[in-house]
Image (cartoon, rainbow, N blue to C red; front, top):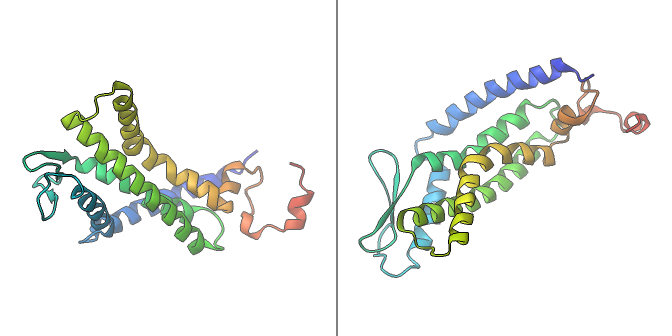
Length: 201
């Protein structure tokens, strides 16, 4: 039987850490991720004809972003989508820090946040492409348009909440032990490899 107390302690630590990290995450006056997102949207926007010089992205009073795709055409990027794309990083930090074991925590965090940053960039471009197509219907092919709609749904509503756990399972052996192993009393970081080899799979 799994050690339920270890799982409960992980859940309690995870919730507390997630609330604390999210508080720090959104209290940052000039969030570095927002700056990165804005640059990644603004620079490619000027590659298209009809976009005037200057910033193609502006923040609206309600928090949404407005993307200028032509001289007189703007596309609204909902702030909720931008927020959702950025949620994977604090969730990942909470999962890794709440998992048992304390060896190589910072190495796992750095690697995982690097992977999630690359995923967030891919999600951002899918999100922007989906928002532009929904607003201006620039893709005539129905199959491509529907595929982009599915990609938009995955990028905004699924990947931010599933990717952190997948990356944590991939990089953090202590978290893998908590999820998959039968004996959770000893974290994987402290297990004796000679004893672990004697345990039948």
